[in-house]
Length: 242
Image (cartoon, rainbow, N blue to C red; front, side):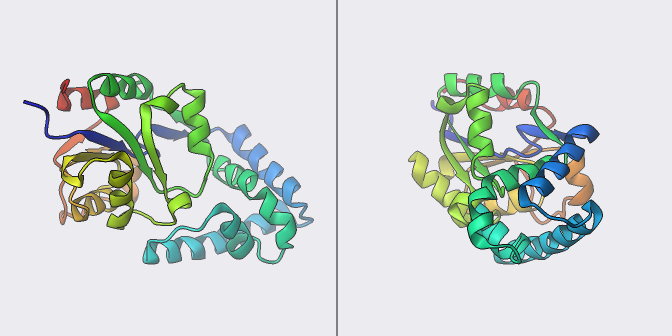
């Protein structure tokens, strides 16, 4: 008998990849961002303004469950006092640098082999992720040689919807051609990921127990995962060959 799950969707941040603190890398990102914008303000003053605006944007996006495009993020929210015609073409690069200032994103050591093995076992593999970047994740997939293994990639910055809005899960299921009840989701947020997955009617929710996430958003007890894991490799125990 076939496994009831046909498609497995994965989160990216703190699930397939983690953030490593690299002070030199982070400092260079801040300098490069300032140079790209051409600001004459001090680094402290410039990023104080950006951080304030960023927090306003994040509050709004979490309340509405809507994500801005890179262009809108920079021209409307973060740098509205700069000429749109200057900032809009730079928005993709600015987003990369904004993320890089927080650390270097690296894949978990077992992520690549697990994605490949799950695909080999007969599962359709996809991504559902809340992210402000539009190109970083596809570029990472290409660099890891994983592009062909992910049958669909649904990013909040592209579809303009954020988890836990069930619409982003339904969109992913539609794209991959599988009923939600036969889809599984693997994510690290014990509230947002579990809640959205349940509301969308996904057949299985697997929570990646990532300490960095749990410290900021501990489980509420309102929604529970079907499984909890601490490494990508544990997925191979949950999903046998179909």
